[in-house]
Length: 396
Picture 1 (tube, rainbow, N blue to C red):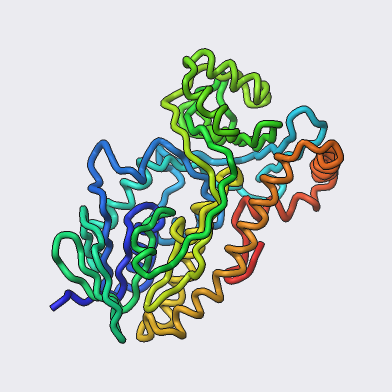
Picture 2: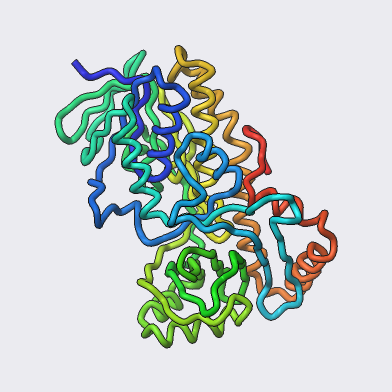
């Protein structure tokens, strides 16, 4: 007989691990399983690479409340100021945490140590069973359960199945859920950059004629770089020596972020806009990158996924005896759709607006950014987005 669980999470990356731990801590009477295909060793896990993510202040507060994140973690750095600018145009806007009576607008978190800390908590949580490394080979839909057959041969039954195994989710396809994607015809170079004199907890969003750039402050006087451009330029910069790459980066960004002195290992990723056709299936919900893939420049990806987790955990707490029912999954979809659609639309619109070379649009962008800097009240919507201050079930 399959081993029975209340909730089975497929995927043990940041979204899946956060989901399992959130559900387990808010609902300690429930039995939870996590299925993760890749072993979390000391030196490798494909989800836990050298990237960093921006945690909005609302995300930080949620994770803190569950003891999943500590502000004094060596892999966390506060963002106290964000500057948004349009290269070669006069408009810019600065957002300071003091303007909104906050200690920080958010935190930059290094994915590798953060992911490992979550897996340590998974192993320590008494009501979580971790199947790792293991993966899903088949799913049988029954009235009261989804029966999951694993590659190891084990079978587990889930009243509620949570798909959280990333944008390339193989589990999603077992339910016939399509993932509609649109390529941006751009790639992103990700790297850690050392800067002379430190970063002073200052983050930058910079838009150039070739694509947007972001510098996020992190530990040891480093920035986490996201540099977006057409794929042929990605290949050129990836092939450069360290010195030539730093020179090209400095030329493209300017000196507002300081003088760049060293670059770590570079990686590149294709950029896509993607969304699952339905957030739900039989006794199943889809969360995180398996549900939505957005451009990284606004730093909203994991924060959006964590709001999936929050809504799901709260619904489970409210209806622990109704897990996976049609009413339950429909309520999840209704509560998440507006926020997801709005964030994806706003992020996509921002990228396309600032990637357009039209002089009229450039003037409009400059006037908009200049007005935001002159009139603090105009910054509030952008600041709220940066801090993740959105009501659950609603858009930004």
